[in-house]
Length: 139
Image (cartoon, rainbow, N blue to C red; front, side, top):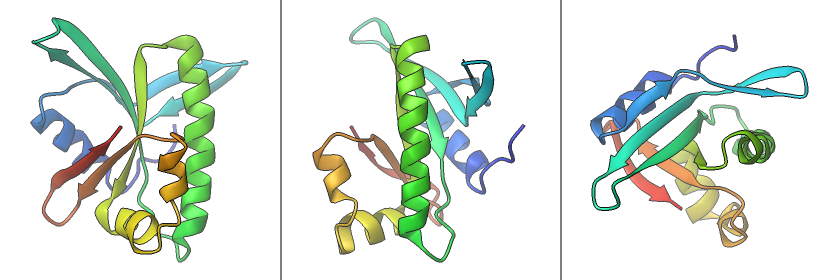
């Protein structure tokens, strides 16, 4: 089993605090005789729709010297997991959880990652590790 990300427990708790039920830790992905896993699987009952919303969350710390390299690696993993998830659990939406500082640097300051959002390449959960809160969901 792969090592858990530095922010794994924090993101898990933030989802629970937001009303999500953690259903998988980790969420197993079995594809082409390979056993992969996404960090978390969660569900939430949407009362107005009387339906469940299901998500999977891949958590990344972005701690390396090059946040661009971290983003490249995370994006490759996200695309692979998202494509597999569409085959095995098409109702589940994949999110990449990342710290606010990395998001600000890559998506706001120099807008390096902005093209990924414009082209609907990924969905994000942005969290502030110091204040221990989710600051933004980017659908």
